[in-house]
Image (cartoon, rainbow, N blue to C red; front, side):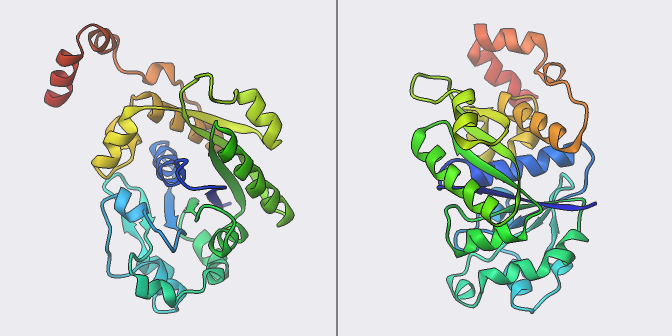
Length: 266
């Protein structure tokens, strides 16, 4: 059965949109049909992240009854499907966020996995996106303010009788400031789907307007997203075998300049 997975967070700046895009790209990597919907109507970024900032027809047109959902879908070169939202402030004023749940059955016919990037926080847009969901994934980093807000989001979703698929912890540095995975799990009372390490390749991918799963498929962050996608789709995946070749890892440690030159040539 096709399912709608809403990716949300208690606060902004924790990597929610980056995770929604890379999770979708990772699921698509395993041969699954994936659609990413930008449900963050106020501050949409999915299109910007995937190099399609302005398109003729988008989610806003669908919510206003000006277009059919399938007309607002655009295919990335990777095969990943995207339904962007409008960047126009004028368009935003015409939209009622709660309308998005009216299209649940139609959205479910569009792809095997529908990943919805919601607004952060507990406002009307976030609630509307959560209401649309079959399952919820909550994004946080390992710091107390973000975890506290993530807990509020989980409690709200539970009150709305939604299934919490789990929590993804981003930008993990494993320093003394961060909470341990065990502490995060205990505090949120939800399973940890995965830990995404702090990784410069994520920023490089953003600069290239693409998912790190596409631009740096063997990086630590990319492999972490694939591990989560494999768990969600019940697909076998060996992260260790998906690392950069041994000779490249050695050269990277011993001669960073040579590594950069090799990567440019490759």
